[in-house]
Length: 423
Ligand SMILES: [Zn+2]
Image 1 (cartoon, rainbow, N blue to C red):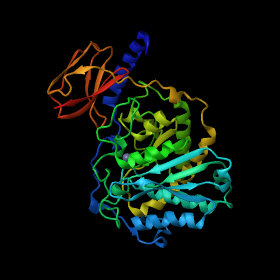
Image 2: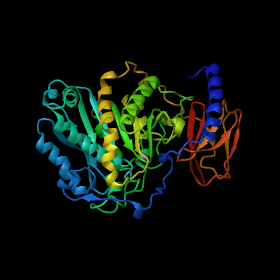
Image 3: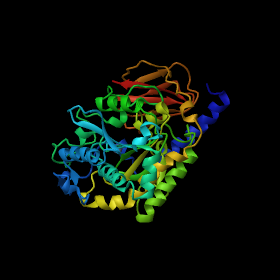
């Protein structure tokens, strides 16, 4: 429970952050909007139908090449790499994870680190970056001191492709027709339990059920989830603005992000400038999104996870992939080492669960919604894309939804939230 004084302060902050959210001239968060503006015809997408054709890393692998590459890592480095099957997609494709660890760690477990990419099937830059990272770490073991030290001290898990049906929507031989969604046309990054404890719009998709099982059977301490469509480092929370509910480790996150951005800019000074000059932002200050994976990992697993938006385009021309690697490779490796530098705070797991018991009726409603009591702070109504569509002052008792399209909305008031259906 919050004290009334804190509640009042929160209401003031909320008002401030709301006007900021509406006025800010930021590039819209790609996660908040579905349409992919890049036309299919404009994509220069060269595919590799054999592992050898991936040798220059300037192509996207076919699905079979991807499977062959993953198997090849384990075959070539049996003492360092195993391939786990996290699960299968709706259409039966494999969701794989390369587990990189020195075999000694079976006796002496090391802290577990997790990278995963491309839960939005058309955001494929990270897919190739992750494959190349696996390859680079394994080939560098024993010759590159940094990689050797990392593998000797961290159990590194890398899942290059979380949504294979989305990526190979056009068939296993091309990523040209990749889509954001899974085969059920569900956005997997709106489909996790969130800190409100509210259910996602769609039933839990099997790709996410498998991922939840997998992460529940590990103790990942640090992770990152790679996306594309903008270049910015996005740290927790996504469910709240930083004024509403800052992550307890915000300062640590900002320092980690700054190191990542600075390292990348050593190789490409124009990277990570799509949203602001810093190159990083608290997710909710960019756009609040519900039911995302980042907050799920932080809130439910006390795993510090951030979202790395690494390329301005979602499906970059395959010829640009080596350039992205040049910019990002050192920062991606250094981020793994941040696991030795975690804050001692355990507050993330102690963040009070948001109270989902805001009472309003009727629900569903055709137009008006009544609150059981006057609102103690401003009311914000978000659509399923996380966009604030209505903002009403403290003291509101009746909300008129007649101008809004039919659908599901989240009504928030201070620390209370509930979902309503507009018929
Ligand atoms: Zn995305």
